[in-house]
Image 1 (tube, rainbow, N blue to C red):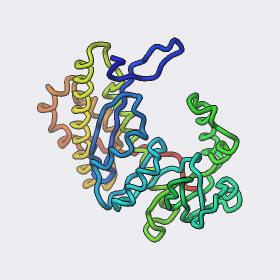
Image 2 (tube, rainbow, N blue to C red; image 1 turned 45 degrees about the vertical axis):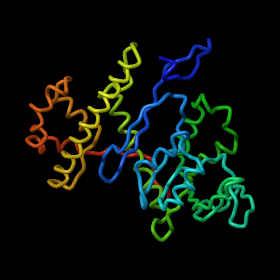
Image 3 (cartoon, rainbow, N blue to C red; image 1 turned 90 degrees about the horizontal axis):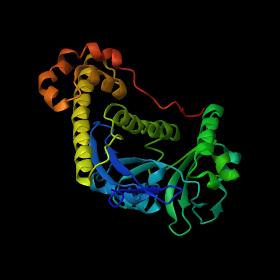
Length: 300
């Protein structure tokens, strides 16, 4: 199995088996636009250009730090797409005249930043840099996560730890279209994808795979992904129904709990018989409406 889905190696140099799932989630419609599986050794940066198969001109792409590559941002600009991403602190920053900027010093001096800069010693990619200080609670939370990160602990310099006290983003969206305060709120919407993976792990047991042949494992994974697509379709339908009745949104996590109450574990056998439950009980599931939210807020 490790031959097809190689993972990391342990202290005895034994190769583990790890599969990675890449997901493109369309925020406006709620659709799962693209899903693919690969070996763990294909990191997120290697998958940065996969998004261009499913998005087009005018799209806004909200990216996690793991997908931070200047080449992909340049392509988005060239393809007339928009992006919003966390800033990678290892990238060098220059002003528009080409003079290198000490970003930490600038943050300490100006507190809030919203200006165009150049990124990368070679690339010199012009982007809009947005930064503002976080409150004490969120700063502490970030630092605790960084200290617990066993993979990157050795790279956490003093400057890096200090910069965790700021929310720093890059984008190519003009100021006239998106004020700086909106940028943070917009990026927080990306929290939805974390909820999606939590649902996959909790209710679809996506991480529990039997030790068997590669073909059998792939069949199980693809079957679970198909069930996930069906469940997501039900969620979109129910969410639209509830919104029309109450002008509120369903929580994806609590909707997954609701689905488990009314559908047996054997989804294919129960879907036809129970599909009407979503419409007949639409009023009953309103109590599952409160959405999970990222607890980080834009600083004053």
